[in-house]
Length: 39
Image (cartoon, one colour):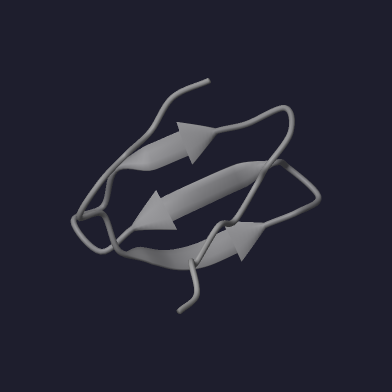
């Protein structure tokens, strides 16, 4: 498990299991969990 704080993801490609951040960094994933939090 890896946690990336303060990283804005601008594109999710589910077919290739790839994320692209606002800074242009590409992340590959096997399983993606999006936890936005709540109050």
